[in-house]
Length: 177
Image (tube, rainbow, N blue to C red; front, side, top):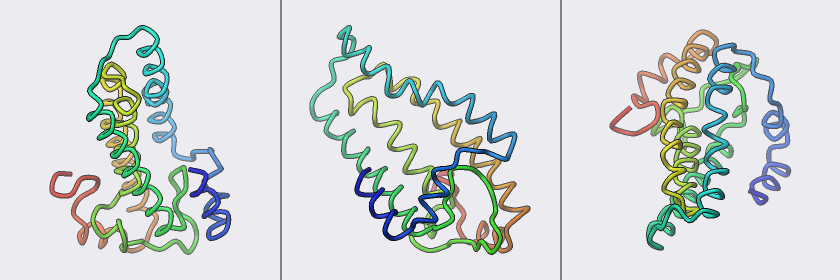
């Protein structure tokens, strides 16, 4: 995370500045974020409680595999930031913004959510907690809701997004959705 921060500091300071803002303009997005916040927090809190009380006993291979998925998810997240200088924390269409259709955006329309989903769903297992994995599954409908609303905003505000949707069929998972 630190290396990505320094990369953005050097190569994309405007992107880094945009990512530091937390003000969501879309009311539906605000609701989605507030409703999903307990899920995101539980991914990191429950493994500590689980460890304290010894609820889970995961095999080492599963923890290592989950760590690999966390790293892969973060790698996808980084590729998105490198490819899309408009990648904000909140949903907006900026003046002059263009549709990005290269890199990971050539495979799925929302690769950042793919990376984030992988990262958050694998984190409980990487931290040794099977119990924290259960609420982490709720990240899937939260991301789906966020994506569906985001696509409405992009369709209404960004020239060329409809053509991009026709070119790149899948939102999140190639061959599935």
